[in-house]
Length: 250
Image 1 (cartoon, helix red, strand yellow):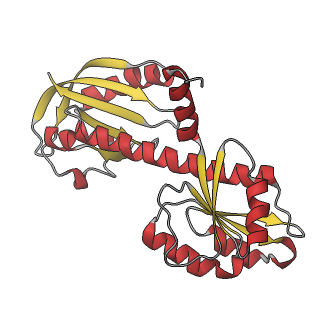
Image 2 (tube, helix red, strand yellow):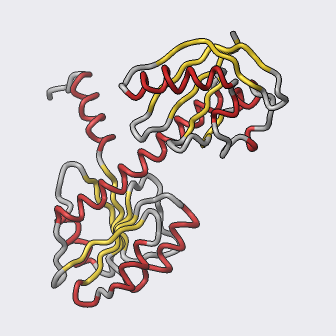
């Protein structure tokens, strides 16, 4: 008997971990078998359940595929209660698909649909819907983690929208300017610096970051109390025209 090498075992385990576990809620065994065959790809591990019951086990499930559109509302309510951000793809029979029905399905944040014709589900479209929902959830989770790390950073960080109003400030930034962070969103960033510093940022710093570079320099901030404070500024531009300010006491 040949024993797999540790490298091979790790590779197999990694492939297994990368697979997408799909729970199929189908009305009968025939539908379940059809969907298992539809998702016959190494990327997917398919589990099936005959009915969307309250005891449905979502443990380890990456996406739910519902083949029972008549029970969609009840099913989505159960999903929201147990796993609010679980991606769900609803299979809808094309002849019976009204615009209102499809729009109702898509009002749910983590839900999409695939039209099936004569009981047949286009495999490529179903796979695409599943992967799109999963990627959206991954990116949102990444964004939440990124914002959490920025929020806890020691550096004083703020993000100003393209219209110059602050959209986000972390705790350190609020402390730096002597105010509550909830009072800063909507404030034009120019109000936080002296006129001389604002002029320098607008004429030198912002054109630099708009060209794709980072800018670092000194300036004078103005706390909410009006007290001037010498600071060292770092400025970064984002693709949408937003500006990221990092402010350190000089």
